[in-house]
Length: 359
Image (cartoon, rainbow, N blue to C red; front, side, top):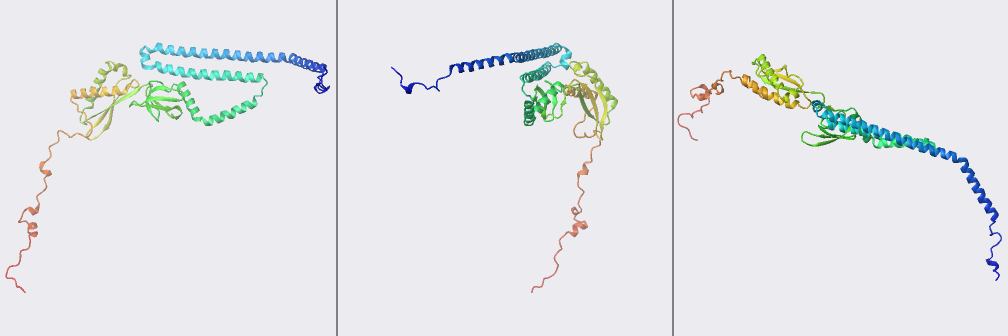
């Protein structure tokens, strides 16, 4: 049965089989030639990238392990000193632990950023990518982020330098200007303080302009004693020195006193009193306890020695003569005597004598 002419393909629609095979063969040949010419370059680039990644990972792991080992050694040394007398006075294990962990975290982050960032740039350079536009865009983005988050950056950098310089730590009593109290936590952005009334202050590190650490070095205990000007200064010095010697030999004051109790002399001399100043160098944070104990002992010693302590308003002199009771009585008035000229002058005028003439 013959096919209709309309259903038969035309000559133009019949593909040229030899031409298609030749084109496919040419494409395969070109691809093979391109691969043959560039496979060495691709292999070199791939090996270079793999080598960069492996070296970066090895360096990062080694640096992080070294930093972790260093921090562990710092914590171990702090724990070893903690049980001794020196540890109780000068070393706070919690403070050392938090400080070392914060420094280690910062160092690990910085090391990872530098190593991985350098490796990423080297990979892009190996791929023949132009880094100039990328670096320019990163610079502009960094400036924009710096302006937008300048407070956060300031807090972070201030926290890093405070921790690295060991300006204060957990357990220290500090005056940060905006708040004061005992440090309970030191962070890279915020420092937590507990005030004298139990409140907790969250102070941003960037807001701290000056710091007064009351727990470093030593403290001074000062006591002012007011006595009568008639008291003997030699006797006062002798009594106070006896109190100081006895206190320095008793526990726990023998550890809290880091120097002898000294009578500095007269701090103020008035008509009704004079002030004797006593001072002592103490352990940090123990000056108030030493002051209270000194006042207690000095008061007892002065009572036993018959030395009176004056406080508040000036005391009246016991040897002063009693005041004349008549001094408070007003003088008699001249009007009290009816015969006095003043009384006669104030008497009413009597009516005239004799008959009165009526109109």
